[in-house]
Length: 224
Ligand SMILES: [Fe+2]
Image (cartoon, protein in one colour):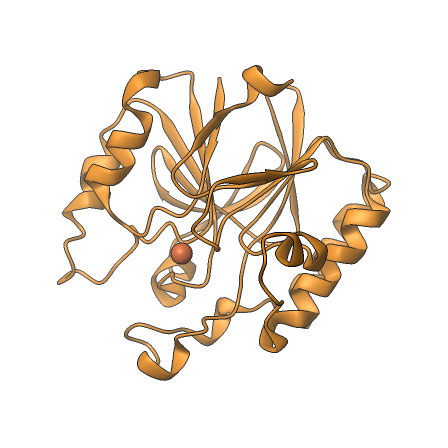
Protein backbone atom coordinates (compact mmCIF):
# COMPACT_ATOMS: atom_id res chain seq x y z
CA UNK A 1 0.00 0.00 0.00
CA UNK A 2 1.11 3.57 -0.65
CA UNK A 3 0.66 6.32 1.93
CA UNK A 4 1.47 10.01 1.50
CA UNK A 5 2.11 12.65 4.15
CA UNK A 6 3.46 16.19 4.46
CA UNK A 7 6.58 17.76 6.02
CA UNK A 8 8.20 15.65 8.71
CA UNK A 9 11.14 17.98 9.60
CA UNK A 10 13.18 15.16 11.07
CA UNK A 11 10.89 14.68 14.06
CA UNK A 12 10.71 10.93 14.67
CA UNK A 13 7.98 10.80 17.30
CA UNK A 14 5.72 13.05 15.26
CA UNK A 15 6.08 10.79 12.22
CA UNK A 16 5.41 7.68 14.30
CA UNK A 17 2.29 9.29 15.77
CA UNK A 18 0.97 10.14 12.30
CA UNK A 19 1.28 6.62 10.95
CA UNK A 20 0.52 4.71 14.14
CA UNK A 21 -2.96 3.59 13.14
CA UNK A 22 -1.82 2.19 9.78
CA UNK A 23 0.69 -0.40 11.07
CA UNK A 24 2.88 -0.13 7.98
CA UNK A 25 4.67 -3.32 6.98
CA UNK A 26 7.31 -4.42 4.54
CA UNK A 27 5.07 -4.10 1.48
CA UNK A 28 4.14 -0.50 2.31
CA UNK A 29 5.64 2.74 1.04
CA UNK A 30 5.33 6.11 2.78
CA UNK A 31 5.88 9.11 0.51
CA UNK A 32 6.84 12.42 2.17
CA UNK A 33 6.13 15.64 0.24
CA UNK A 34 9.34 17.44 1.18
CA UNK A 35 10.98 18.87 4.31
CA UNK A 36 11.81 15.29 5.23
CA UNK A 37 14.58 16.64 7.42
CA UNK A 38 15.99 13.35 8.73
CA UNK A 39 19.23 13.58 6.74
CA UNK A 40 21.22 15.74 9.15
CA UNK A 41 24.72 16.44 10.35
CA UNK A 42 26.10 13.80 12.69
CA UNK A 43 25.87 16.09 15.69
CA UNK A 44 22.18 16.71 15.09
CA UNK A 45 20.33 13.68 16.42
CA UNK A 46 20.75 11.63 13.29
CA UNK A 47 20.08 8.55 15.36
CA UNK A 48 16.51 9.17 14.14
CA UNK A 49 17.65 8.27 10.64
CA UNK A 50 19.09 5.04 12.01
CA UNK A 51 15.78 4.29 13.71
CA UNK A 52 13.88 4.96 10.45
CA UNK A 53 16.31 2.69 8.62
CA UNK A 54 15.31 -0.19 10.86
CA UNK A 55 11.57 0.16 10.20
CA UNK A 56 9.97 -2.54 8.05
CA UNK A 57 8.43 -0.20 5.45
CA UNK A 58 9.93 1.97 2.70
CA UNK A 59 10.13 5.76 2.89
CA UNK A 60 10.48 7.83 -0.28
CA UNK A 61 10.68 11.60 -0.06
CA UNK A 62 10.73 14.51 -2.45
CA UNK A 63 12.99 17.28 -1.17
CA UNK A 64 11.63 20.40 0.44
CA UNK A 65 13.51 23.59 1.23
CA UNK A 66 14.64 22.49 4.68
CA UNK A 67 16.94 19.65 3.74
CA UNK A 68 20.68 19.22 4.07
CA UNK A 69 21.25 18.98 0.32
CA UNK A 70 25.01 18.60 0.67
CA UNK A 71 24.52 15.41 2.68
CA UNK A 72 21.68 14.08 0.51
CA UNK A 73 23.71 14.60 -2.68
CA UNK A 74 26.61 12.63 -1.19
CA UNK A 75 24.53 9.43 -1.25
CA UNK A 76 24.74 7.28 -4.37
CA UNK A 77 22.33 7.93 -7.23
CA UNK A 78 20.41 4.78 -8.07
CA UNK A 79 17.44 3.85 -10.18
CA UNK A 80 14.41 2.91 -8.14
CA UNK A 81 11.02 2.06 -9.66
CA UNK A 82 12.02 3.72 -12.92
CA UNK A 83 13.25 7.05 -11.54
CA UNK A 84 16.46 8.40 -10.07
CA UNK A 85 16.94 8.50 -6.32
CA UNK A 86 19.61 9.12 -3.76
CA UNK A 87 19.56 5.94 -1.72
CA UNK A 88 19.93 6.98 1.92
CA UNK A 89 19.56 3.51 3.42
CA UNK A 90 18.14 0.16 2.46
CA UNK A 91 14.58 1.46 2.90
CA UNK A 92 14.91 5.26 2.49
CA UNK A 93 15.05 7.01 -0.88
CA UNK A 94 15.24 10.65 -1.96
CA UNK A 95 13.13 11.00 -5.10
CA UNK A 96 15.09 13.39 -7.31
CA UNK A 97 13.58 16.26 -9.27
CA UNK A 98 11.85 15.74 -12.60
CA UNK A 99 11.57 11.96 -12.24
CA UNK A 100 8.80 9.51 -13.00
CA UNK A 101 8.36 6.51 -10.74
CA UNK A 102 6.06 3.55 -11.31
CA UNK A 103 4.99 2.05 -8.01
CA UNK A 104 2.21 -0.51 -7.64
CA UNK A 105 1.14 0.21 -11.25
CA UNK A 106 0.75 3.93 -10.58
CA UNK A 107 2.99 6.66 -11.94
CA UNK A 108 4.36 9.50 -9.80
CA UNK A 109 6.06 12.63 -11.13
CA UNK A 110 8.30 14.30 -8.55
CA UNK A 111 9.65 17.83 -8.38
CA UNK A 112 10.87 18.96 -4.97
CA UNK A 113 12.22 22.29 -3.83
CA UNK A 114 10.92 25.62 -2.55
CA UNK A 115 12.17 28.95 -1.26
CA UNK A 116 12.84 29.45 2.46
CA UNK A 117 11.10 32.62 3.58
CA UNK A 118 13.19 32.47 6.78
CA UNK A 119 16.44 32.37 4.80
CA UNK A 120 17.70 35.56 6.49
CA UNK A 121 17.76 33.73 9.82
CA UNK A 122 19.62 30.70 8.49
CA UNK A 123 23.28 30.04 7.73
CA UNK A 124 24.45 28.66 4.43
CA UNK A 125 25.71 25.08 4.73
CA UNK A 126 24.38 24.82 8.30
CA UNK A 127 20.67 25.50 8.09
CA UNK A 128 20.21 26.73 4.51
CA UNK A 129 21.32 25.36 1.14
CA UNK A 130 21.23 27.06 -2.24
CA UNK A 131 20.04 23.82 -3.85
CA UNK A 132 16.59 24.44 -2.32
CA UNK A 133 15.37 25.76 -5.67
CA UNK A 134 15.47 23.78 -8.92
CA UNK A 135 18.21 24.54 -11.43
CA UNK A 136 17.77 24.97 -15.18
CA UNK A 137 18.99 21.36 -15.46
CA UNK A 138 16.22 20.20 -13.10
CA UNK A 139 13.62 21.94 -15.27
CA UNK A 140 15.14 20.36 -18.38
CA UNK A 141 15.00 16.92 -16.75
CA UNK A 142 11.38 17.55 -15.74
CA UNK A 143 10.49 18.69 -19.24
CA UNK A 144 12.11 15.65 -20.87
CA UNK A 145 10.36 13.29 -18.44
CA UNK A 146 6.98 14.91 -18.98
CA UNK A 147 7.33 14.78 -22.75
CA UNK A 148 8.17 11.07 -22.57
CA UNK A 149 4.97 10.28 -20.67
CA UNK A 150 2.95 12.70 -22.83
CA UNK A 151 2.22 14.83 -19.75
CA UNK A 152 0.07 12.07 -18.32
CA UNK A 153 0.77 10.67 -14.87
CA UNK A 154 -1.33 9.35 -12.02
CA UNK A 155 0.07 11.51 -9.23
CA UNK A 156 2.30 14.55 -8.83
CA UNK A 157 4.46 14.89 -5.71
CA UNK A 158 5.97 18.29 -4.92
CA UNK A 159 6.83 20.42 -1.92
CA UNK A 160 5.42 23.82 -2.83
CA UNK A 161 2.29 24.12 -4.95
CA UNK A 162 0.82 25.62 -8.12
CA UNK A 163 0.12 29.35 -7.79
CA UNK A 164 -3.65 29.03 -7.93
CA UNK A 165 -3.60 26.49 -5.10
CA UNK A 166 -1.45 28.85 -3.02
CA UNK A 167 -3.98 31.63 -3.61
CA UNK A 168 -6.80 29.24 -2.67
CA UNK A 169 -5.02 28.62 0.63
CA UNK A 170 -5.16 32.36 1.29
CA UNK A 171 -1.49 33.07 0.61
CA UNK A 172 0.37 34.98 -2.09
CA UNK A 173 3.02 33.06 -4.01
CA UNK A 174 6.46 34.25 -2.87
CA UNK A 175 8.30 36.14 -5.60
CA UNK A 176 11.49 34.14 -4.91
CA UNK A 177 10.10 30.81 -6.06
CA UNK A 178 7.60 32.11 -8.56
CA UNK A 179 9.49 30.36 -11.35
CA UNK A 180 8.67 27.06 -9.62
CA UNK A 181 5.11 27.80 -8.56
CA UNK A 182 4.47 29.26 -12.02
CA UNK A 183 5.87 26.11 -13.62
CA UNK A 184 3.55 24.09 -11.38
CA UNK A 185 0.60 26.25 -12.39
CA UNK A 186 1.42 25.64 -16.03
CA UNK A 187 1.81 21.91 -15.33
CA UNK A 188 -1.50 21.85 -13.49
CA UNK A 189 -3.22 22.98 -16.68
CA UNK A 190 -1.09 20.97 -19.10
CA UNK A 191 -0.79 17.59 -17.41
CA UNK A 192 -3.31 14.83 -17.03
CA UNK A 193 -3.23 13.62 -13.43
CA UNK A 194 -5.54 12.27 -10.75
CA UNK A 195 -4.22 14.05 -7.68
CA UNK A 196 -1.41 16.46 -6.82
CA UNK A 197 0.19 16.16 -3.38
CA UNK A 198 2.29 18.93 -1.84
CA UNK A 199 3.40 20.13 1.56
CA UNK A 200 5.29 23.28 2.57
CA UNK A 201 2.38 25.30 3.94
CA UNK A 202 1.95 23.32 7.15
CA UNK A 203 -1.79 22.93 6.72
CA UNK A 204 -3.97 19.99 5.76
CA UNK A 205 -6.48 20.93 3.11
CA UNK A 206 -7.95 19.45 -0.05
CA UNK A 207 -8.43 21.96 -2.84
CA UNK A 208 -9.99 20.33 -5.91
CA UNK A 209 -7.65 17.52 -6.90
CA UNK A 210 -4.80 18.99 -4.84
CA UNK A 211 -3.98 17.56 -1.44
CA UNK A 212 -2.04 20.08 0.65
CA UNK A 213 -0.58 17.90 3.38
CA UNK A 214 1.06 18.49 6.71
CA UNK A 215 0.24 15.94 9.40
CA UNK A 216 -2.47 14.07 7.54
CA UNK A 217 -1.67 10.74 5.95
CA UNK A 218 -3.50 9.82 2.76
CA UNK A 219 -3.80 6.15 1.92
CA UNK A 220 -3.97 6.05 -1.87
CA UNK A 221 -6.34 3.09 -1.93
CA UNK A 222 -8.84 5.17 0.04
CA UNK A 223 -9.11 7.93 -2.56
CA UNK A 224 -8.92 5.97 -5.80
FE1 LIG B 1 8.14 22.64 6.28
